[in-house]
Amino acid sequence: MAGGTDALTPDGVVVGHDGSHRCDAVVLRAAGLARRLGVPLHVVRVWSLATAPRPASRTTTYVPPLAEFEQAVLSDLRADVDRLGADALAGVEVDVHAVRGQQVRSEEHTSELQSH
Image: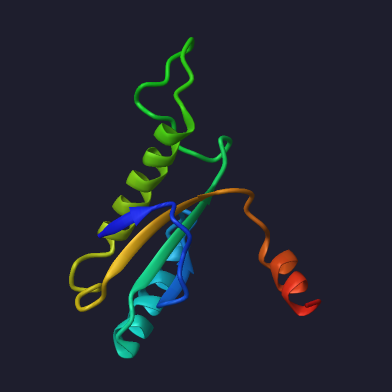
C-alpha cells in the first residue's frame, strides 16, 4: 500500500475516509468499483493540526514538524484501511493519501460543484 501527499492523479477511484466506521462501507463500495474497472483505489484523509493524531514525539514542550503529523495521519489511515481486511480489498491496488487542509461539509462541497 503506497501513501503520501503527492498530488492525486485522476487514474482510479478516489474516496475520502475521515476515520469513522461509517466511512468503511463507502471505502468498500469504492474498492468494488475500482476492482470492476481495474483501476487503483485512492483513499484520502484531509487533516489539519486540530484533527491530526498526535505524533509520539510530541510533549508539552515540543511540537513536532508538520511531516510528523502527516505521518501520524497516514499511519491511522493505513490502520483504518487494513482493518477492512485483505479479502475485502483483494485485487485492488490501494494508495492512501494525507492532504493537509480544511474538511468541508458535503452540502458546502456539493453547492460549490453545482455553481461551476
